[in-house]
Amino acid sequence: MSLQHSLVAAMMCIVVASADGQNLGIRPPFPLPRQCPSFSYDAFYDFQNNVTTTNPNVQELGGFTGSGCSRRGVLKLLLAPAVTDPGRRRVLVDLFMDGNPTEWVFNLGDSSSNNGYAGDADTQWWDAEVQGKGRTFAGYLSDNGGSGQAFVVPNAYSTRQTLIVGDGHITWIPDNNNLINYYNNPNLFALNGQHDDRPGPSNYDLFLGINRVVSQGREGSGVCKVGIKFLPEF
Image 1 (tube, rainbow, N blue to C red):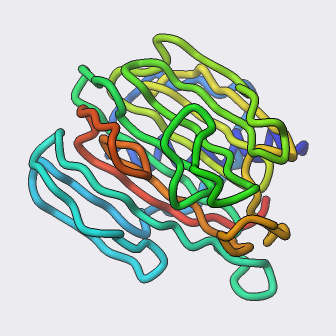
Image 2: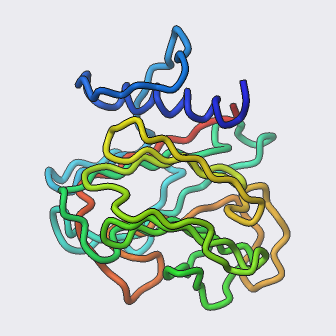
Image 3: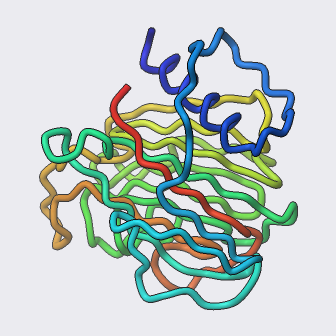
């Protein structure tokens, strides 16, 4: 099975398993494995009901502010090399929204100072990021890739955006449907400890801004719940 097919199969298992038994009308493009793995998030944040499940590999940076679907904060996601922890080679980020995502809804990037549109104030050479602004989902390559726009998808989601991110690739499913997207580029996410010439160190980390960018100054609303699940290589 190809990498793309493996990613899609894993995502379909996870999306179905995390839907609390609801019939979402999801139709995978090929048969799923007979036995999908049991599923639970490693970390979960329910801002409407003030319920949190923490994990040592998901760190809150600076705490959260606001309430409900306008609660804002940044999470540091600690992936790992295969020799250290083969179960943290990829990560699933599940974003549940209120149907009215506004302005800077989420920002997932390689740099601790990502602030949208490929910017990070030169903290990292490997500083790729994806962003949700309103209902538009877009990705930007790292400085190593010229900081160009990798993709842009208008009207991409309304109530849910499920992402799987690994070294150099991202897969996403919006709004619990069968529109499965895959993009790969060696200058997207650098999660193999690639050498970095900028002040920021080489690492295996990602940063998730919720209802804001990772850095400061750009905020939004609409994300009500977030689930994080670390995954192995497929």
